[in-house]
Image (cartoon, rainbow, N blue to C red; front, side, top):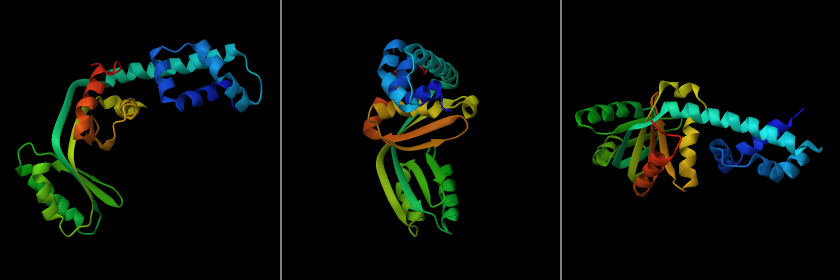
Length: 219
């Protein structure tokens, strides 16, 4: 049988602004309980006291605050790398594309500080490179089917702790900030200790400022 606490948690989860406000401790439990009481009773199909709702909200907010404390320890802004002048190219996968990826990797090795990132999915491969390698990519993959090319991109790479893989909500805590600020994420690439977010050039300064000023992300 579904409980008051379970429904309250679901309501909070479905509202990012509410979730963030509770995590920061800036929302009145009593006022929120009064606001959600009609919807909660409709879902439970019975009357619920405001005190029971307040207790359910309090339990949920304590979990949110604990998650924030964990994220503070594993997300560091002391090592953020911003790169500009990037291009993303996406190709259909084929029987011949893997060998060409090897050629591109070897080419990038010969170019000092050149960015070359490859993400190969089931049906397509996505390549992010410095724009000065764009023509090389198109030449080497000239026989492959290009799905889309996006120019004028930048990337923000954030250093993460190794504990990230065992901590829920780390990527969400970062990406929700961009969603609230109407910043489109073109792509995202992650390794064990790095998260790279690819954005349009005109969004990178705003995105960096948001990350820098967000209070849960302090080294």
